Image (spheres, rainbow, N blue to C red):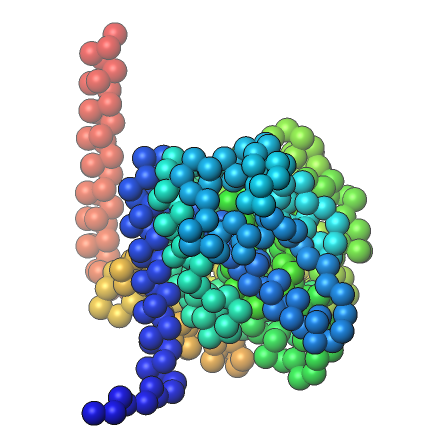
Length: 518
């Protein structure tokens, strides 16, 4: 019986996804056998740098072919014998201790029999060219191999060699699989103050901020690059000509990420999503003195979820005015964001902030007063509990402002809780479709049970000297208060008495414990 011809569309896509998913799962199973690796937090970064080098070599092959067809010379980014095709592609190539030595030694025998720097040492020394060499050098600056078995490493390399990064269908499919890997790694890390921004939230923020062709987009704390990949796709959909595409590729997308591993993850994430030469600053976005950030460092659009709750060294804090220095990283980033937006109404920003930023007093109040008086804080979208699970249980807010002038009024929109559930969770997350009512409201704003408007001039309180003493943006939904509390006055009083009695009981327990210690 003749074999049925392979169809097009979904069946082929499924086959590609299954094959790539099988490669990645097999590689992870092998890496878990290595005694030098401890869980996915070790395995996944190793897997990603291997994929990164294979990707670079496949892209170089494409560019070499294009240059040859055009009759032009091609200057490689990575020279022999350090290309993937030289040391990794041969399935029977170096393995065991020889492979580990080639990767990690300062000087070793290379695949061509000569002696020279090991692969990582050579990559760290790359400079010049079109900027890609500097990117590669930065990626491997803080990297070290943690696999102890060169034989297991060879098995992983052989598997990754089966990925064809020069095939657009595979790159597209792998891009989606890669995002799954990033989520798994961040779930495992659960780093304090740093959390993954759910894709529906990223997509919503990009859609309403609407970057336009020719504008510059920045995420100063880009992590693994979620906002940048979404903004890139949004801009590329507007590109109609080759020149438009070049504008998006070369002059539109910028990021910043100070940590080595997220920097590597973001580089590969952007490459897989079609950015030819990612422009990500590997330095701390807070390292510049605020007053020295000039016009040449300003951008049209900022989309970001900055870290919060961390602490910066004294040298970083000195970059901010004396009365605006704070240990809250989110507030430091907010000041940088305000400084880096283009003036004259051109600049606009969408920023993820925790609840504490809205109601914080002291220095936080002064920074928020600056925001209201110098910028137009036009919208705050309040997300319910669990949207950012498992990274934080607290509700999070999306803050939107621009440089069109001081804030006169603020629109609040409260995203409702999931129907039939108290909150979102990791296993039952927010879906993009659930934000559709907010998107519809955004274009035609009216007060309703979810949306309300506040006079911003009444939010700032000052003392007799004119000093800001409070600026509370944590304005509750007035409609929700009326709708939710159906208790009688007597029931409300009883509830207050019960709560106060419990407080007194706890204080008595604390008093008894202290008495025992005396």
